Image 1: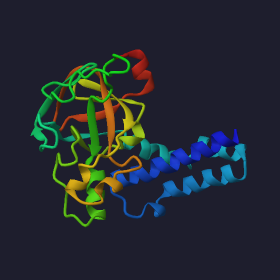
Image 2: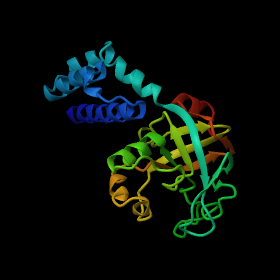
Image 3: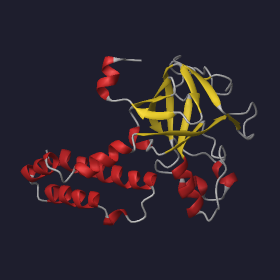
Length: 236
């Protein structure tokens, strides 16, 4: 039980920190959410299960849950297709069609690939990253900005915490994607700016997704995390 309590506190602290980054707060330690987190930490440190459960049932944790819920939706900021030649600049588009189990139509380098080891469709079908995360990297490295598409993700988003939704399905436009893993940066990131690849380590380069329901995605479309009940009632 104590291990479960520790894991809960860690997950909430990580979630709140990431949500503040997404929503642009500069002094998250002054917000009421961090007071609620301290209450959780105290319950964990004291091994006080009753105190922890009271916190979870009471209003103290409500700001955390509200903030987490607020960043489970966002918007498509831009869309990008990979070029035919590896290393060439991605092509910006206004809309894409995604096909279940295959990926993005007209994205030949990754569309319909099959795993050599299993013979099953390759899960890496779509890549996504938050604009807020890109801006944070630019600031850290002293850059004014990093151009849309430069970090080689198919979908750049705003207002949503993607890594926090790994393991969840999201609805974008008429399509549904499963965010299955954080993305690992490659050496191409250092071509944008030396040190960017290192900055993107530890789950800071967005996520990878597979298409579980075909559909059309356009710039400006809303991105909404599907609730567990919705997935169970309407499986893709």
